[in-house]
Image (cartoon, rainbow, N blue to C red):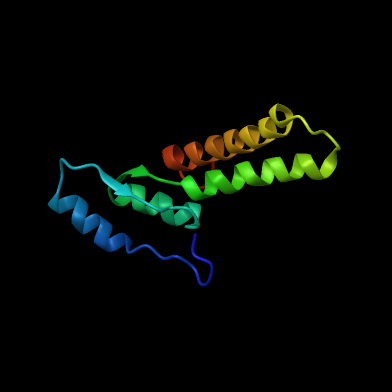
Length: 104
């Protein structure tokens, strides 16, 4: 994800590309860090595949970190499960955005 500044998509250009290539699924590669509103606008303009790998990795890391900081548990299968749960929560939220817009 971008460390400084805010990532900004050119929604108008996405729409132009989608119109020029009507039978080609457009991919937003690297959507981690873009706002839900901007990603939804890109989807409305013609994006069909959205990659959020960095956000998923960060959610996983934070889930593990949260568990480790809250307990003395040392079994990896227990603290790694917290990372998986954090990723599931993010995926559920993002699927709502991708399918229905940022208010879901």
